[in-house]
Length: 127
Image (tube, rainbow, N blue to C red; front, top):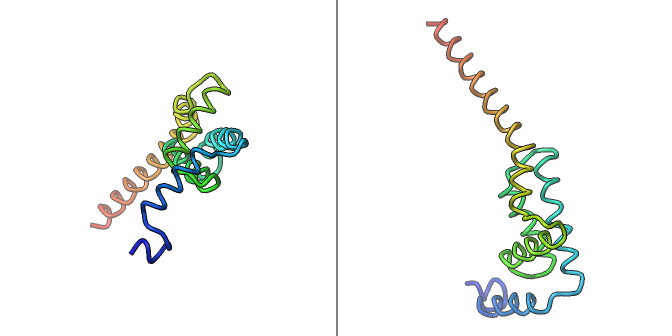
């Protein structure tokens, strides 16, 4: 089924991804750093998201751009971020999550609970 759909075997796909990882262009590290730096922006702006979702989203984008595996993209982002900033991507991402995503999520949960409580009190008053 895979070969019919993608015109190559799964092993050929795997080997192609491994070869692409070994022969990354010179700009790959810069591209990886751009994607790693964008994670904090995804966490803090608009519809906030937890670190793991932002991290996965940027890994998918980077892997598609460089034609490598998502695992290799994550490793490249971690490595370039640590070299450029002297800190771990995970630690900075979790700090951004605590600062921006967690308060939004907690406010949404509190609003839902308040609404549920209000709905319960209304239904009791009708009884």
